[in-house]
Image (cartoon, rainbow, N blue to C red; front, side):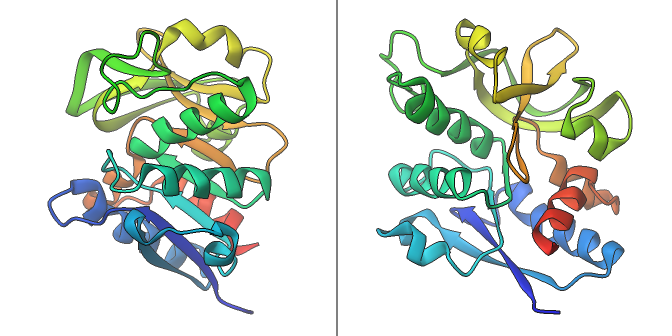
Length: 231
């Protein structure tokens, strides 16, 4: 079987816990599955036009934490490419934020701002959280019938975060009609994950499931992503 490869889109840094955890999470997942999947880091600064040429060799894209990215436009172009071309996609933390921004601009047709990059934006799609979620763990409630619920094979979970920005609830009505839909909420009902109907695999989470791998656990979402890539 031909080896399949994942592109890790972001700006790698050993100081970021999630970046140290991601290779562990992938290794645990592919070993558990017995599949031939490898991965490469693609720093955002290396992303260029035409993005299709650069990403053509990859069977999956993971947009990793660590925003703001050095090349925001390149990251958004990469997310747009995998969404339109139906290539398996996982976005965590900053990846979640930028997946929402890309979709809001391309599909909802709005000026999709990120408050961290544009603090003066009147109604940013990604806004400051009321309470920052920096190195904290929180409860999650998966939407019935969602891909996330199937990945975890249960209705709830407890995952780790490291973020200060999230989905602006002003835009939540737009998630009700799909195809981009809410996949998980926290204990207070705030959106913490989205997924895209009709796509082979497109899941974005504000939480960082990869962190579980630091404790020797196979993250269910990473495993599901690896399965999608390995098909």
